[in-house]
Every structure is written in structure tokens, then in C-alpha cells.
Length: 262
Image (tube, rainbow, N blue to C red; front, top):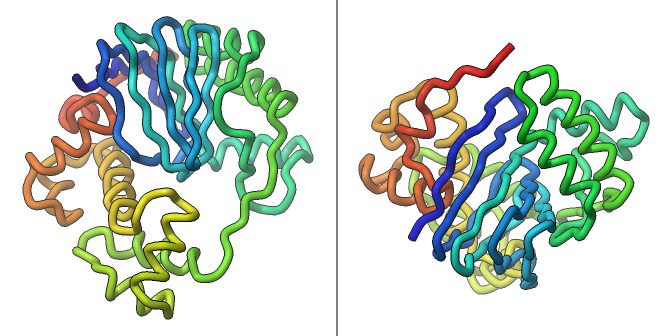
């Protein structure tokens, strides 16, 4: 059974939701933002970066942008989910003089047993207005900076070129031959090297980039049928099924207009 997603707040660089699930889970997927979750009840088994961990009530999980992740739930599980844009994090840390280099930092990922961080997410979920949510985000990032300082995460070789190529060809079907030309290597070396870094094959990763772009377009008001056609899905049903498995909500419901309190 797919998890159910109830959007609580949506602003530029922020999406806050309440997730509930009776068993089920999420397949391997990724997001372009930081993803934090506060487990309210139930037990979650997570997989990321080739590791497995168990998340109990009162604990927080953290994933950096583009980290491949998956999870499964035991029984009835409820948690707060926060998607936080990299631009906002970089801007805030830069203003405070805490950003090393020019790119968004990579925090220590996985399960965090920290009551202050958990309470910060809970308070953010209860914030009624956009101004209070912004204040809550600053407090949350301050906590995160203390308990999980960023560490460098570098890509080597031709992976940056591969990712740029994937992002610029989301409307097309690409194959290993196309990627091998960019990477200047054999299919065997490409798949093995890509798997070592992202823990999924390159075509699987490419499909996740498509879903991230679908999410962005839906938030801009494009219709699901238009998005499916623009991103090279077989049809709207194909995109809807893939989107719901990852997000726990259909594209039409996800893209529905929503207003927040001033």
C-alpha cells in the first residue's frame, strides 16, 4: 500500500507534509532538495548510500539532495516530512559566513536521535503562517548546523557531465550508448561506476530526474497530461503510477492550487 501524503504548507524552497502509511513503503528514488522527516509513530526501515537503518518514534531522518533512498514501514506509521530547497540553505548559511565554497553543503545523513531537532520539526509543522514557518526554518537549520555539520561530498571523473546530459535530455529516451559517449567508457565500467556512487543504475537515476522535473512543472501549474508528454512518458497513466509510488499522491492532486495563511 502506497503512503498517503497530506500537504501542510508549500512555499518556494519549502514543502511540509504529513505522511501516513499502513505498511508499504517507497521504492528507490531521489529528490533535488534536502529531505528531513520526524517519525511520530510506527517503525520505518530506511536504505540510503548502501546502508540500512531503523527509525523509531521520536527520531529524525536526513537525506542530502540527490541521495538515493528507499524505505518500508511496519504497521501504521505517521511522520512529518520537510523538503528544503538548496538555494535557501546556501543563502542562509552564506549570510552567516558558515558556507564553505559556493555549493550547497552535504550534512551527515541517516537517523538522528536528537530531541531538539525533533521538536524543531514538530514546531515547524504547527506554525500557522508563512512568517512563522520562515522563522521556524531558521531555528531548525541552526540546530542542524550544530549536530550535523556539513562535510564535503565531491563527484569525480565525468559524473558531473553525465548528470548535466541527463538533465538536458529529460524529454527524450536515452540509453547506455548515449551515456558511454559522454563518459568515454564501456557500458560495463559506466554501470559499475555509477552504481558505486548512486547505488542504482544510470537509467533508473535518469527516470528519477524525470519525476523531479514533473514535480517542478506541476507546481508551476502545468497539467499532468502536458507534463507527461513533455517529459517523454508513454502516457499520463505511466507518469501517474511512477509519481504516486514515489510521492504518495497523484500528480493531479499534487499540482492542485493551495493557499497558505499570510
